[in-house]
Structure formats: C-alpha cells, structure tokens
Amino acid sequence: MLVVAEVRRAPTDERWCENVTVEFRNTGGTAVRSGTVVFGTHIIGALGIDWATIDSTHALPAPIAAGTARATTYLVCVDSWRVPLGMRVETQDVRARHPS
Image (cartoon, rainbow, N blue to C red; front, side, top):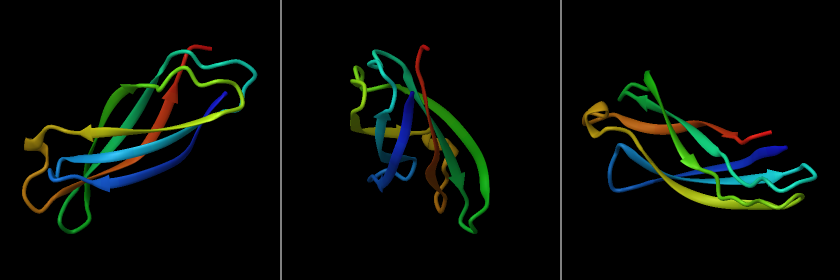
C-alpha cells in the first residue's frame, strides 16, 4: 500500500507553477514498481475564491521498496492563461495510483 505521507509547496517565479515535494511511504509487503501521482491544483482568486481545480499527472519515483519512503519534488503547472494577474495556484490534492 502506497501512502502520500507529506506534501510541501513552494512558489516559483511563475504564478501558474509550484514546486511540490511529496513523500511517499510504501507500507505494503512488496515494492511499488510503477504508477502515477495526480495533483489537483486549485486556481485561487485575489479574494480567496477557489475558481477551478486542474488535475495533472506525473510518474511515481519508482521503485519504492517495501517498508521505505521516498520524497520527490515535482514542478506542477497549469496553463498560464488560467491564472490572470492577481490570482495564484495552490496544489491541495495529491493522490498516488499504482497497479495492484
């Protein structure tokens, strides 16, 4: 079983991107050899209104041995036109998917 244990966000020079560091913990009995991580990036307006959520996927940092953890930093971006001046992104949702 693969668990998303910790998520840390950091801004970039572009308001439509973030560096998102994710720690994955494999609590199962076998190695995770492949899969994807899905990021739900929220577009937040100047007044704090959540206007939209855009999903993106990246590859898991496989393999992750049984009983171990691995942290990886991803550059998560949405299309620049989706984030007008005064708005920002927040990657709030992170899910790991891998074959059973």
